[in-house]
Image (cartoon, rainbow over all chains, first blue to last red; front, side, top):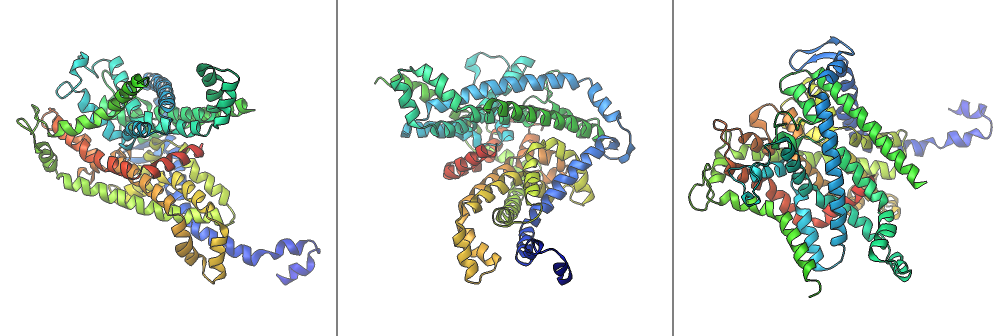
Length: 303
Length: 268
């Protein structure tokens, strides 16, 4: 240590001199961060690598790893009879859910933004469903929709889940009920961040309500609306609980989503973990591309 | 008076959102054909639920153990991790933080397939501890982020004073920092509990032993009982048992809830 110090030019010692205190800080820092690092390594990094390996291997649920078979799993995944219908259904479901939820959430946020007791009650009422788990909410709607126990007979709907279209819209209704409050809250936070001065200025300029909403509120909410859209799109593309519980993918496999396909490939029927891993990789890749695209689009708009 | 239509409209909206929950509560105790409660009002459906297979208490206990362990693990790991990220400089810090947040980018299903294999290799298959460890990992992005900003909001002088007084960093953390970040801990704990209590797909994949199923899985399985005839009364009772703690916690801790949502908004 002393030898290096003597040999180095005069400018360097300063840089090499800091260690004792800083190194101790680094060591203490790592000590505190080590549980996080261990968790991330064992339960995240290794599984991500493992799913990559599994996707190119002949890997049965009970038989285990039987060697590399690339690209068989990927070919099988795309060739499955239900692959494209599932992709199509998942995208359709995602578009419907996202459009409906964001529009409704925005309307609700505008409706309850005042700071009165009545508004506070409304906010709570709309938010309560968000406290439920998605599985519990799905079970609740399962009973709510069933002909034997439904209290909704007066609506005159003979079966809520009987046809593909009805099953889709009934599930969308469940999701809107469960998530509207959550997105309303996100937008409410952004709404309350808009200063009153801006509105006053608009009023002075003689802008009407509708005009103010279009040219002031909406643009100022853009980043929050974008965040809601990203969350909602990602969540809907990965839909599983609601369809597993409510429709089981039926009627006639019309409501099978991509994640259900993964689950079925691995545990219900095919028992093929390699195939499930390949499907998982496809979903992961699609999601990454989509998210990068959304971020790019946002950045471009902001500039 | 001018506001009357507004009150009618918003009032019906509130009813619409409250109706399904209220209905589940009422229907679970009201008379209904094909359930244990055929005549008069009462708690027979809860009796069916209690006697279901291993007994509701077993599943309830599974859920309590899994949720409790998840909260414990999440609080411990994110408290230490948040402190490290907020107060120390160490090589690899930014990378580790980014990778922790990257957990959000990877779908549950993508991770559960390899985790199923990995837990088998670790001898943690079918284990409530293994389930809690995986659920903790899913909580880490939110929890670590939340605890990091909580620690960063504590004035540095507070901690420096403790260090000058001769406390080690452990003492400073426990005596000075812990009380200051308590609101963050409550939020993290609340979200970890709710996520663990409500999670469905993780136990569905990782737990194959019916007696180890947490409550949501058990109630979902309950529907396929008795020669394909579904006992909706017992299902409604199960929903009430599942929802009650969540709704009570929500009403009691609304502030923390909203705080969590807001930092969720920052996350993007």
